[in-house]
Amino acid sequence: MTIAGNLAEIRARIARAAERAGRDPGGVRLVAVSKTHPAATVREALAAGQVDFGENYVQELREKAAELPEARWHCIGRLQSNKVKYLAPWIALIHTVDSVSLGEEIEKRAATAGRVIPVLAQINVALQEEKNGCPPAEAAALLRALRALPHLELRGLMTMPPFWEAERVRPFFAELRRLRDRLQDDLGAPAPELSMGMSADFEAAVEEGATLVRVGTAIFGAR
Ligand SMILES: Cc1ncc(COP(=O)(O)O)c(C=O)c1O
Image (cartoon, rainbow, N blue to C red; front, side, top):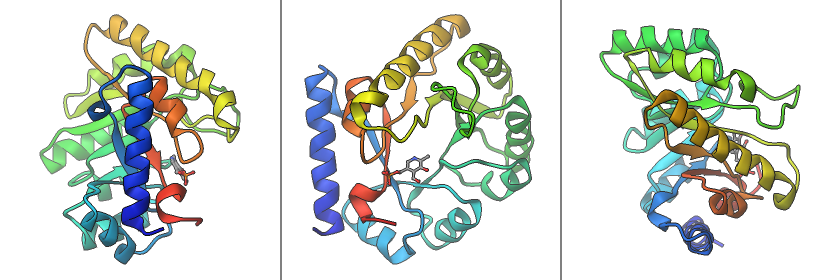
């Protein structure tokens, strides 16, 4: 299969999953996770109409974004405060804000860059010790703090559940959706995005309400 062929297949599977759930397929955005793959590979995906790309490591993200500024770049990996300054001028969406202190650093660097940066709060719904993310019980406080920062636009939630088969992680996707609904009520403001689902489970995530799916291996092959 070519990258264009893989992308077409994934988009079709997303559309079918959305339809099964009675959702508009246009409400799901595909973020192609290009980590470890060279810029030439990203270019191939761009040529096939893919716009959004996700990377885990800041250095790799910077290099590819410099080479391919026409793509929309998403930060989907753990972000250290001292690296925020490198991304602030151009990052499209940071999926992984899991603390007020990281939010404050983004605020500072966004103000310096003269822009508002869209962000998601990363939630550790499965309460796994080795995973990043804010515990659900602390999410309301985190969201209120992030909402108060004028150079951040809080768009919703992201999660990275355990690497289990799709049907076993589905409850975590449903849990993130319920949490989003509660937190939106609590905030009294929209924060509708749900970034959840990867190659092995994006269809379950779409059925449970994902608005952003992060898919790497199924598009680009094994890393
Ligand atoms: C946060 C995050 N989302 C999505 C992916 C994509 O995973 P997959 O290659 O299984 O689609 C990765 C891969 O490393 C990831 O770290």
